[in-house]
Amino acid sequence: MNESHSPLSRRRILLGAAAASAATVAGASAAHAAPPAGAAPPAGPARRPVARDRIATARLAGGPARLQADFHERLDAWLAFWSANSPRIWSTPTEVEGQAGGDGDAFTLHAIRVIRDDETRDAFAAGRSDAAHLATLASLHHHFPSVRVEAGGALRVADGPAGWTGSAGQVAFATTACRELWGLRAADATDWREHLSRAGHGGDPTSRSGWAAFTRASLRRGLRTDSY
Image (cartoon, rainbow, N blue to C red; front, side, top):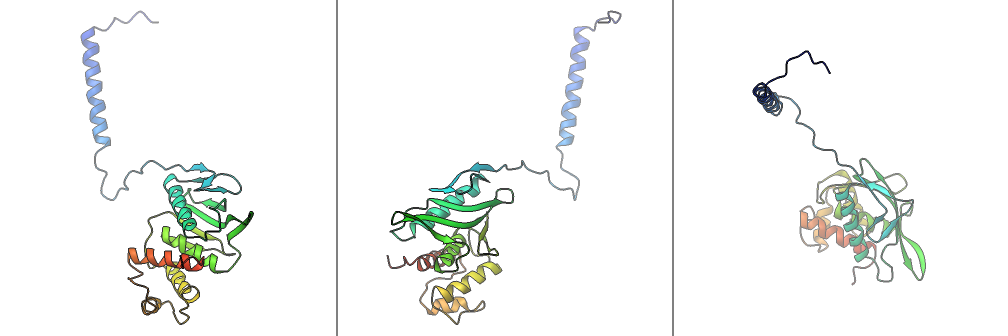
């Protein structure tokens, strides 16, 4: 240590500390002042996906998937809803096959497996074009704003609050559901709502409550549980 410098007095130390503190506060205030016009707002903290090995009662085939926590909760609610409207002779879903995408806020569904007559069966399979496929599509539209049918029949959903948006995907689903599940063969993308109304489906299917009712009823028709 160099002893040649004279020691600072306590008063000088305190004055120096006060000045430094004032400079720090002034600098911090300036740093937090409103950004100049046209500047982008500061980015919020990034959400990190977490590893999940199940969706509701079902094990994820292939191991854990990294999903955003709120999106995982929505997937849990969706699968519980699908199960509650499935045939009584099916067990609750035991396995789901699919992959997480994006930043953990998207999921592509390939299969839902249940137990029936002591055997594991695919209650939904992406490559099988049947009423159960359309019913599962309805259940996803009930819970998610964006649902897309991929090549090969897999169903991709993205996170967000459910409801009618008027997207091409929703219109395509509604038209197909009218034709294949409701027996309204003449329905098309422009008049499917009128066909539903004439068939006795109450409410406006493009309202929030109407869309929820239509997708739930379509799920039950596809799984043939609308009679109970």
